[in-house]
Image 1 (cartoon, rainbow, N blue to C red):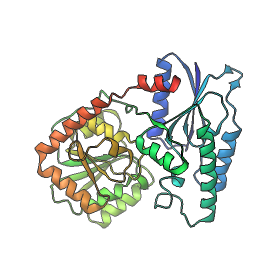
Image 2: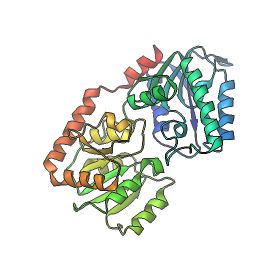
Image 3: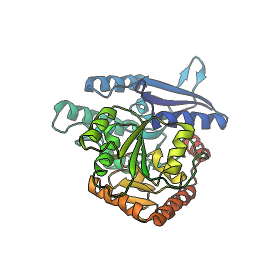
Length: 345
């Protein structure tokens, strides 16, 4: 088949969604399909520019081009699923989260702003219409399926997939640090871990990897709390450096707000490390079994600090949780072959 994968991008911002798109393209090509990624730049603000992108995708018809008919469209991101095609499948990475599960929180649009309310009403109405009209609707997690069902009454089937790299992750003897690799943005909540380190009595440091818009605020917070000897920033890590940091951590912290999926959870499990996440972290709570493969705790610094100290205080149990996490990952049977089969049936 000729398959178009549709997505949007914010220029010069690369993360899990971009890796996801490229890996899906590769998996479809490996299965013998011709594949193109169709994308446009996207603006989150102001509402007029969001509507402009919505209108643009609504006018797109991907049925045929000079290259001939496109047999299937796989739409990944808002608002690309507004396009016209008789054989459109949606595999939703996330909707316009600011107007869904982030709405009226510190991470989303305010409910007391008239322009935001009007945009939300428009988005929810169009989303319900176009998602209901798709051939199939999948999401990346049960958490996201529940969000869509509760918000607009459209429930997609959760379709899990493996992280970008699997075989390279491994486990080595633990060093005294907890590891948090992620883009530094407010929703990822690096600040929670930094604040928690004030209360951690264990002789460990927090190692934060990644860059992003919250890099300087996070650095400032570390200085304000006099934690420069307890919180280290190591920048973007890739390949062997990233795998080594995972392999030597005694635990991995990943406590974002309402994360739809989260590769970090799986990468920690593949590295046989226990994961500390939060009750409101969304997707990670589907995979972290509290007390078995890690800890699911309240999203506040003291609770997180207590979780860190508990794991450090019983290193044998922490190691057992890490190994259980690896087994948990293996039991899920994640594969791109299954993804391709579901999306092309």
